[in-house]
Length: 124
Picture 1 (cartoon, rainbow, N blue to C red):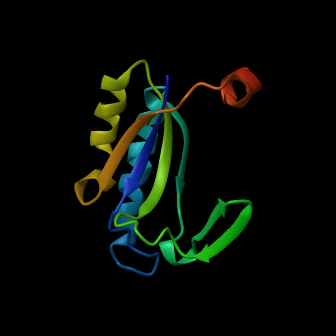
Picture 2: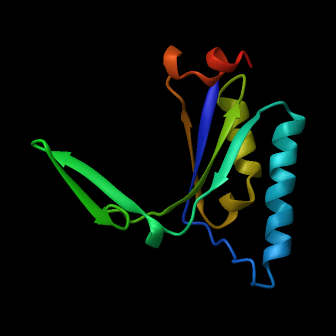
């Protein structure tokens, strides 16, 4: 089953920060562990929330706003998609994610929609 790990409010150093090499090594080690277990599908860090654009359509009118949705208190920093045999394994891997130490990892099953299922489309 596919699970998405949504990473919120993590302290991610920028490349010029002296902490960056260690943080990158820890993230790469996590991704390698997910690969070793055959669970890794994808992982994507997001640019800062200041780069976000929000789109809403109300009564047929499109409203585009710079930034994340204003009522959002947590900021989504990135995602992983893991293919795990069950929720227990997804939660175990989420706990290994280094961003769980200072942020929050939301684990959510991905709804199976056959036309959108990457495994059905790619044969993977």
